[in-house]
View 1 (tube, helix red, strand yellow):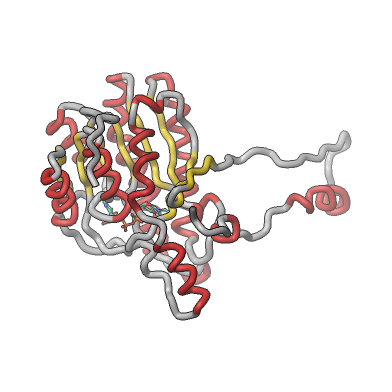
View 2: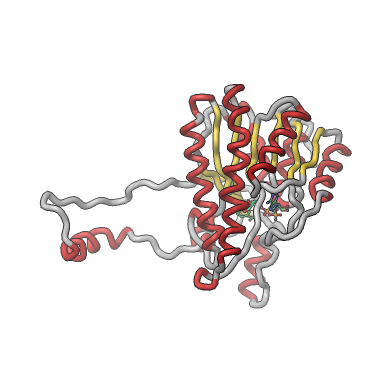
Length: 307
Ligand code: NAI
């Protein structure tokens, strides 16, 4: 699992939610390439309940057994003070911080019309607020040292769409906008910020029902996408080899890496005299209709087998 390279030698990286899944593989790969890693994980359930430091500690043990350097942190990213504590732990333990990977995540799936306030808040708190808290806590360090890297995990549930995930989709698309904003605001300090939209078989998507043959086939397809396949891009983005890469959104699915599009005007109509509701109906809609987006879900767009 551990590499022998030095692609991110001596860089100090905080990976949130690194006690399992994609984040654990980030921590292992980074340490294998010479980074010193703060392995953060609250040790909560998929829905974000409970706390267990042993989840982060066991990844630290794995890294140390393989000869790497890491330290565990069991705080929640959804808490402003705790976010500062994890950044401070990196600085106190290793003397600096070079990269933050906002990877911690939970799900509280529910159709929009049934979603309650707790389900909304819990998911926004971990993904959107958590990404802000941890990023903001690292910002003064990045500014002072005139370098730093942010990597945020987003999702095609937000970038494209998915059923029953209004809280998660809104949070993840918010994180994409947060990343772009950080990239713009902190470019003057040579700070970079990018997003990765992963596809990988983890406990988070392990809850997908497998009752029908169709669902079974979908899950079998998902199981082929290993969490370790996301790590090489993340290690690259954390490294000095990625100096020119900022403000981008990548997607990774097994052996495929994609650059995702960002919002741009698609077609326009204008009129010298201004629009009325009626002229919008009569002229704008017929002109734009062919370009309207379908209610695509992620799997409608990524509709071929992963390579
Ligand atoms: P996972 O459930 O295996 O890992 C998430 C980790 O975050 C868990 O270890 C959990 O304990 C930790 N966590 C939860 N709340 C926390 C908090 N408040 N503070 C600190 N840690 C916390 O899930 P997975 O799949 O590895 O997800 C990693 C990231 O990738 C998440 O942001 C997820 O939304 C995103 N993602 C994953 C996809 C996939 O296909 N697995 C698809 C799209 C996005």
